[in-house]
Image (cartoon, rainbow, N blue to C red; front, top):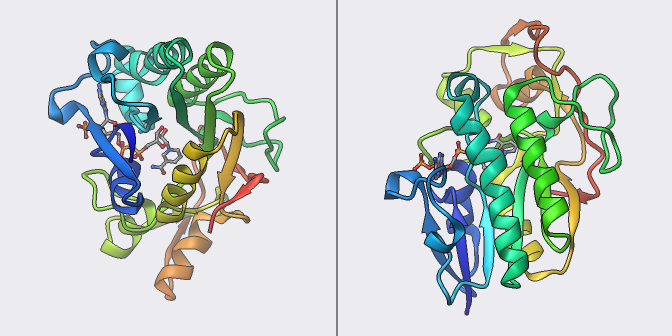
Length: 246
Ligand SMILES: NC(=O)c1ccc[n+]([C@@H]2O[C@H](COP(=O)([O-])OP(=O)(O)OC[C@H]3O[C@@H](n4cnc5c(N)ncnc54)[C@H](OP(=O)(O)O)[C@@H]3O)[C@@H](O)[C@H]2O)c1
């Protein structure tokens, strides 16, 4: 049995990982609501001796949340991954860290692992700096960069498809393109990725991008309210993923 520290265990991806990972994994969940605030802790506080794999899904994951709490965003999305990367390198543990397509500006798609990343939000910047810190401090770590997650997660924060199907999302951007990625399929890939020796950045997402409106229509199959995306969010984040999910 492999022993895995899962940060962000109560989040959308963390919950899905707990559902999807096979019985080969013994998961040690970690999250703020369990009393483990990673902005104040060190890796030695949460990575016990028997743990040999770490999956970092903890993040301040909303653009608005990062603007409201910039210090927390920087500590959790940038400083924590850096500390974890150094610790995992020094103690020879396998680290997989999760990143986002919102590190790209949205003007020069399609994006690949070689594309320059110039975020347009504080969230994007804190995540990008975290990715760079992981790459620099732990060349064996893998950074899995994905797009907007869809599917049933059953977490306090909901996925885009959960918002559409519950009626919480009512207006949809016609001009904002993402590779809507199945959260369950991504979790399965993360298990594979932890076992593998893949290192560096990997774009792992659905094969094609579509507008958020087209995605909503594909689920609801009825007329929907179409709106243009505001100027301050990246419009076309089409990825050309090297790892196709789903
Ligand atoms: N959701 C998406 O569409 C999407 C798209 C692309 C990339 N990503 C990336 O995927 C990863 C997982 O995102 P997600 O959607 O699962 O996020 P989420 O649903 O917002 O969950 C965030 C997790 O981080 C934990 N957390 C927050 N603040 C913390 C702190 N100070 N100390 C310790 N833990 C803390 C939360 O714990 P509590 O619940 O206990 O607060 C929760 O378990 C992130 O790296 C995100 O950038 C997500």
